[in-house]
Image 1 (cartoon, one colour):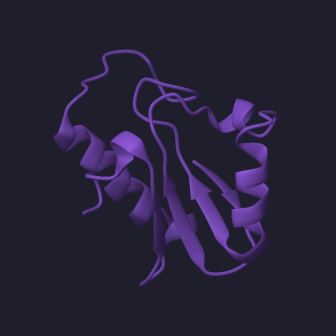
Image 2: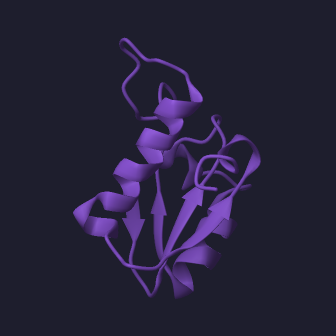
Amino acid sequence: MRLAVAGPPLIWVAHFIHHLKFDWDSPVWRPWISLLAKRHTLIRFDFRGFGLSDRNDVAFTFEKLVEDFEAVVKAPASSASRYLRCLEAQGWPCPM
C-alpha cells in the first residue's frame, strides 16, 4: 500500500496491470496520480500477485480481492470513517 497525503482519503482500486513503483514513472499514470494526490490522501495498492505484492501461494478469487480491499480500508494509515473510491476495470466490483 502506498499513500500520498493531501486531504480526504481516496482509495484507488486499479486493475491488475498496475504497479505501485512503476506507475510513478509512467507517462500514462503519473499525471493521474499527481492530480488525485493534490487534493486527497491517495491510497493505492497492487492487486494480489501483481506489482509489489507477494507472488507465493496466491489465490485469485473474488473473496480474496474483497479481503485485500477490506485490509486496505482497515489499515491504520487509511482508517477513516468515510473515503472516496476510484474504481477501475477489474477493481470495480470489490468495494460495492
